Image (tube, rainbow, N blue to C red; front, side, top):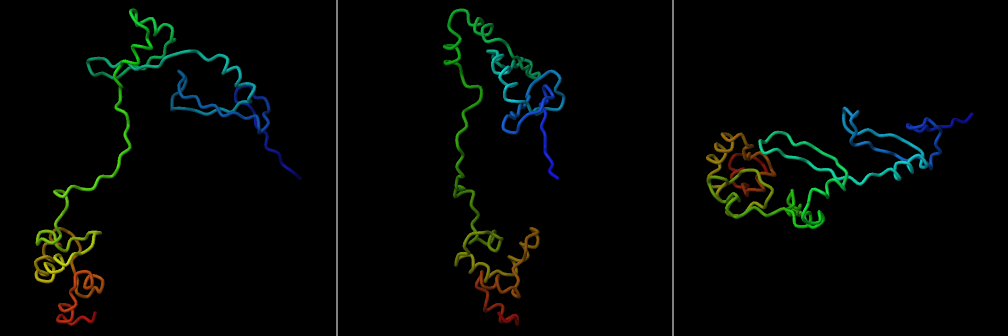
Length: 183
């Protein structure tokens, strides 16, 4: 036994063949309460929509008192008549953009002032993705207790001599051996 899925037009309730289905998204309508909705109709039903298109302009009015803007849609002929001395096309061409054009954003490298100096006692041993420099390793080796106190106080992980990865990262092999850890 076979089953067949049948589609009906949301506009006329007539059966629609699959290759004739047109999806219609209603974005603005006085009856809309919860945002855009979607309907399905037959391609020949959509022809009536295309032939009934109005030439309109959509705009927003922003009151000077800072209250919420008002969205207005009006016939383009009535809008064009508002520019009494010149052609509306010229007025629009010379107008300031309402929103600055979007420029593609490139990630910028942090400036030198923004970068932390991990070779300083203040930042050495903090977790970071970069390479651990010889200068940072030396600061950590020579000040491990102070650095661990600061890391713990700041809520960061401490540098442990029983952790082979940390020992290798900071060159702490000698200290780990002195403390009795085999690394």
